[in-house]
Image (cartoon, rainbow, N blue to C red):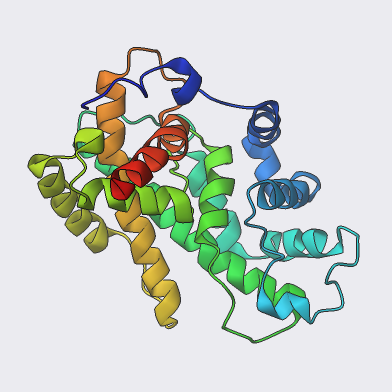
Length: 267
């Protein structure tokens, strides 16, 4: 990378007390299938990261909308726990607790990336169905919950799940497409991105009868590919010990690269 202004613990390992509490609250896999934990996990992470599943069209007309209680989140947790697909997904995610990327572009890393992308896309699908049950609606025009899904699963297994939202996804796209030279994304990186994307598109099931949800799934796959390639650079070039690479990447994107790209575009 062409500048070392980003290369410090203050940026890469930036973490507030709120995040520390959330990581601790979500750390025990036994609690991922426990309503007493699942309901507040959805509530706290959704509200903290402006991605709450409560924010969708059908819920605005439900009798639980803005009632000042935790009724929606409790019923949503109940409906998730009643779903076989959800319980099977959580059991599969538990196997990722001991996995770590090597950041040397290995076949093992590809397998982890495939499973994490599949998990987030599957969780988004399952969550949408659970919300329909909660709000007693057949409305299929619910908004996309990929961002929330990535954030919840990141707090479950922070070492392997990449967070996405409009800022981080847009910044990564710019890093791979702009001519600013920031992040030193070169021809070889773009070639590897194309190869990795081809593999994940083949291996990850992102199909959906809803064209928008299918598009959102593909966007997350692209995000994971870009995030992993840039993570390899961070891991290799960072002068400080990175605590959690997906979190470090998110910090790097939000607190350093995004402002730098804006400056570049304005010059």
